[in-house]
Image 1: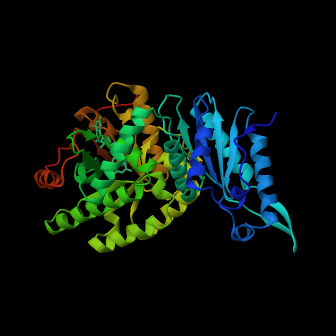
Image 2 (image 1 turned 90 degrees about the horizontal axis):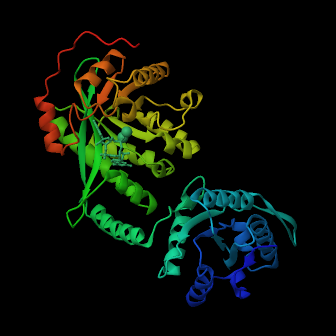
Image 3 (image 1 turned 180 degrees about the vertical axis):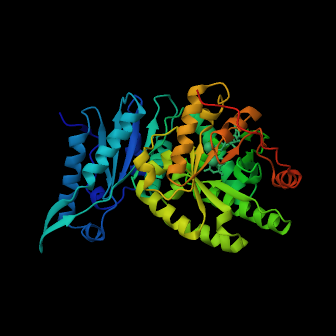
Length: 446
Ligand code: C2E
Ligand code: MG
Ligand code: MG
């Protein structure tokens, strides 16, 4: 049995978009499936050649082939419809989990990306589509406006068009969560536009010399109602709602502006900023970093960009290009939260990284846990094998600091040395810093 097509389409829908009211009726019908499911919006992203054919019979053969492929992938209970000449809506019904939605989307993308052969007056033409797929969860709870689901899927598809993998699935959320996130997005956008977010700086030290080295810049935001929002949540909203590039530029420019002021006060700190996967996939971002450095007159060696393993893995091709450009500028590149992902030895070697940041989960119990000590030793050695500096995150006490130094770790960051602090406080910390006396090693690895 083939999946049940959603209401039959007026002929016009094949070559032109449905009117807003027809769209609304159509989406209601699609979304009124009474079970939890996911609405996928597939944007076919036709080549110029196909757009030129849009009104012609050949266009119909392409669409017929597209629909045949879609049908071949969907399950009988799923529903689909051709919403316009370059957009398909699919309702995946009763999905047991998020992973299956992602799998279905990738299968659809792969199938629709394969070339399609069409007969034209001039002979045979090969059409290559570059589909982008956005997905939004439909909750069975009463009251969810179908248009909200559809517009979320459309937003996700728009974002997918910018990404290499061309699939963006919004996480499953309840209506209450969605409303909260929508409100937060609105406030965050306003705060970003008005430059009302803060950047705090957390000290980083050289363990070999005991000297201060620089800081990691970390975003901070207090909502108009006075509540603080965690940086991880800020980053997740920015990624989901297409604001990540703006956030990263804000942090970059704020950090470089402070570096400029500090330089004039004799403070030669270096600074690291966090990059998201979305920014890695933006081909213009590396150039933007170069412009920002010249605008603020900062030597590139004083800036390090931090990437996470998952971002690098997800955007492998664009990440490599991005990293090469950043290194060509002369900036540092750190792999953040190292050890929590799935990077392999061989995998790491292909990237021009300068620093490995060992995740805090290995550092927390360093003083009491021999196996954590062995892991950290291995990670430090790994970093050195690839000519990178090793930086340990989350150092909370003197004991951990000493063990790390004995293990040959180059740098450290954590509450023991200093919490993330506002710029003026960081400048005061820097001025008042006195290096701790270096003690001889006392810890042997059992
Ligand atoms: P991260 O980049 O790994 O940053 C280190 C986090 O560990 C910071 O949390 C910092 O406050 C915390 N930390 C540092 N030392 C200690 C310690 O000794 N003990 C403990 N328990 N925690 C420590 P924060 O500021 O909450 O940031 C969380 C994450 O949010 C960051 O992890 C980063 O992934 C993300 N983030 C923060 N700012 C930005 C930003 O500007 N852009 C992006 N894309 N992500 C950001
Ligand atoms: Mg970081
Ligand atoms: Mg980290």
